[in-house]
Image (cartoon, rainbow, N blue to C red; front, top):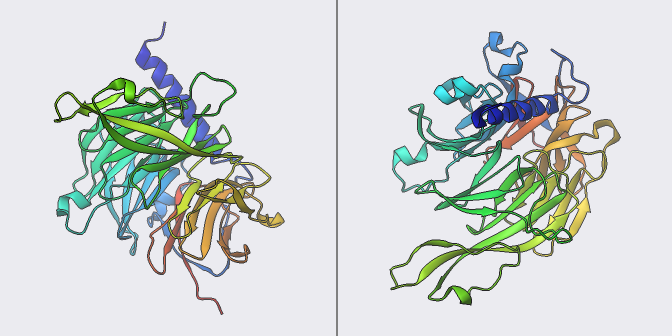
Length: 405
């Protein structure tokens, strides 16, 4: 009979295979030439070294993320390694790996840089969190290539998110329907969020969750989405009480648990989670959920043929519009994000492409097409004239928007 560790390793290998296969869906062709169209300019392809550009599934790009100041881009690979590049020159600065990575050799599933304030110490500005198909969550001090702490979840972890600065909490999601909340300072799990046993009520996820995202303007609001065709919005709050019986039942069916002893005599501090709203429809299979902090709109990307890119009102959960599909680049989406105030960026497969869409006209204004495999991940550096990164096969394509004529 298999041991627990063997079963987990087998499950991790299974999902790693799913992830690798997923990014190759569509008309995958090795060494296929790419084509840049519209108001975008391709400025660089990573890695710069030609020998590393050879097709290799172990070096396949699984996730990418720019640092807070946009100076560094982190690339997570299928073999578990994370490479950090100078975003201007393409020079490889650091490679993050350790004994766990060498042992499991499983994909990096997400990377997020820890938010910081300008007044923070220098060493606190160089921390990132990475999740892995092995179930590991690692905190890296990337300028020293040192792993500061490792959390081992009993599942395949697919993504994580910090709440906005000053961060005090982070959340993770994965191959099971549960969301986990952690205290950032102690790295201890403070809540497990899951659906109730009521079959006819959707008050928690019912399938794999691919993305969790905190609201950029509120530390206590976060959204999640995945395979059950819902986006769910939750709000956390602290409550102090002397009597457990005075805690009202939670709308999402979660049992209330004490977070910590409070100095107010026998009182307890409770972390309460409220289910604020649900969006029905999006079939999310990657980092395809984003919140616009200015207009308070949500964009979702779905891995399907119809209604792939949709815009929603955050407060009402009602759909504002579906972005019309272009027959020539009608991709099934893995990634979708707001790109500044005026654009949306998205990427996917069948066909393999990344494109920029004007938010006002909903027209495609630039695109990268005819790629060797599906675009599994995208990010931008949040600057005035942003760099845009798209990962396909073992490459990362760096682009910039051109000024419109």
